[in-house]
Length: 239
Image (cartoon, rainbow, N blue to C red; front, side, top):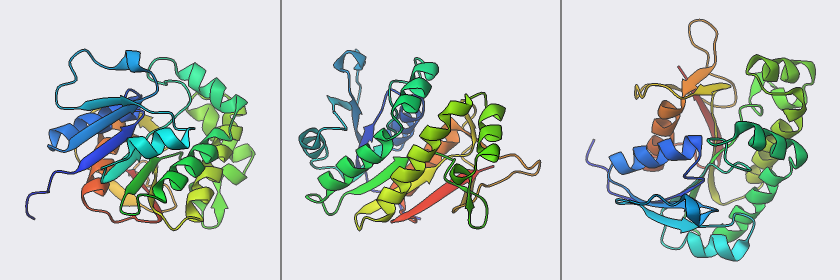
């Protein structure tokens, strides 16, 4: 395969756990990156080859201005900053689970004036199917059990359903969106560059575990940026 042409990539939530890795992966492949965060004080003192800008995902004009000239926008939006305070992000999501669908509507509205732009949204794993036709977010006992296994309070189930509602919002749109559901167990780890692709059901390893490092999730996201295979579709990955 020939050399990938450098692209203009915007990253919402570039200071978060996943956003940081996506930024690093994009820069390592020599793409032109605009990193968005809500707080200008988070800009690094030495931005190197990255352009840093503030962006309010709830403000249509802010988003429309920010996406000017981009080829692809990657949204890793979460309330708060989980890299700094995971509990705060969890509690904000519990208090207002509708934010995910609200952000989806803002991003899709902004894209109406940028028809060539592709959007890749990093969402939740709870909208994956436990088995054909049964979405985890639509269960009660199994959803709470899964949250307990990864150390998240049961009350977070409303946020899981918020992510599911956001996915359904994208599914009603004819814009060029892609929804990425990471593995249930996603953690800081090694960049192996290897993963297996899935669609609406979790990808399990030989031990029946659904897991991926954040570093390899970033690889998969930038792979999708460079070679779009899931436009107007959801995909997931695992080892």
